[in-house]
Image 1: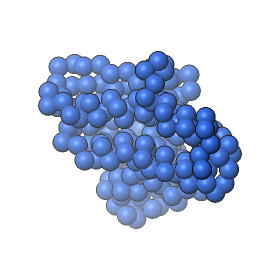
Image 2: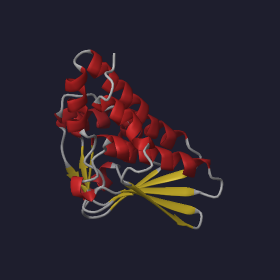
Image 3: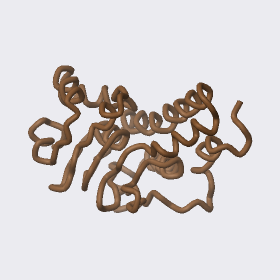
Image 4: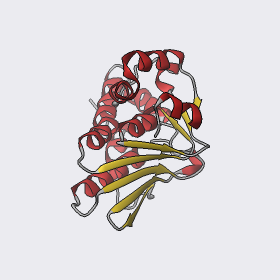
Length: 206
């Protein structure tokens, strides 16, 4: 049973708090929208408040017939450092294993996976603009977009393999679509960080 006032409950509710600091910035430019992950002091790590705010923003934009394209980027110096592992570890410790682990994984599938599914299933064009490191779940969301563009400072960081995790939240599907099965498998097996030029040569970015 999830304890009252637990960190897990805070994770679930945090994106619904109207008084929570805004960690996602939305700018409308005609029929386009630019959505910026805006917690640069933490390299736009995917905390519960940021994730819930992002999912809410993308749902509204996806439902708006006047929005034809959405650009997803991160506040400098990077796109996203990926999931907030400290937050998830603390929630597991507070809840206790294995119940805590199961609860946190359900949250991951619902929130992280929900954003990937929204992007993949949308009729709106999604463009990921990588301005620095894109790691883990952040990379998964970028690869799920219709187009991925990268600045010279962009860095592709396949964090899942280095953590002993399968490349999920849509990563395996998106990466296989771009590189083919053998290319995707070989890349994650090596776990190499690659810069923008190498990413272009391999087919990660356009």
